Image 1 (tube, rainbow, N blue to C red):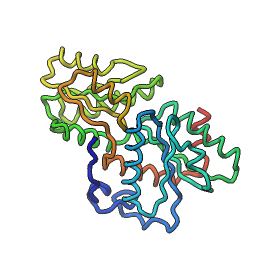
Image 2: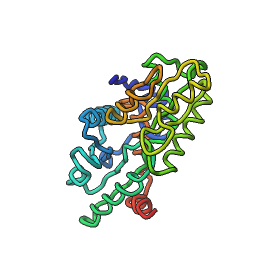
Image 3: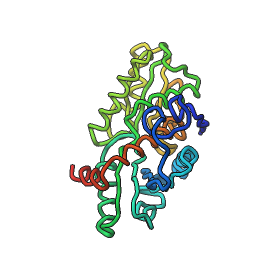
Image 4: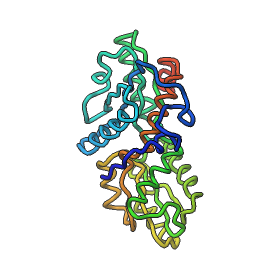
Length: 276
């Protein structure tokens, strides 16, 4: 997959190197920042872990003072307990694109189990990467790399997520599609690679029947793997963009989520989320 270079303007919204906060004008980071533990879903496909590692390496480059560790919920190592070993305090961020079962139940439960073993452990649990306005910019970046001009009025876009049994998570994708359509596309429709409809192939076919001159698929997926391959092989679009991967926008979102989590009282959000 293609990895985009991270220019300072992108990391700071055009104002210089990323320093956190609005416009990059907050004070310099503390001498000993709270470590960041980023937790990805995990996959049997080695490309997924390689992409996560590459994304976090860009985070380290953007914030060289910040200790960054990775953990996986399934299929890959290290597990959360291994990644947290030796830490007394951490910001835990789910590297997930929507809030659903993993972020609301699985991960908070794992954190509560760790705290039961060590009550002194201080954890601030941050938000998922999406939804976030920069996600649309990242999606347009990948489409542009595939030869699709952002906002092309002759192109209809199918925004494809992995799909979830959580109707609320799927509704977030539909809302993103509606917002994205306002940027000038012929149309934007949501689709789901599993657990919900329309499927990518159904959405592409519906747009063709409606008269769309060209149909492009934009995978709202973090990394290569089963779902990305399934979408690419079965959607039948004119163009299929790459996964989000190491997009500069994701680096900025991740660091924003980290800074926001620092304002949370340790342990408060993970307990509240787990109780939902």
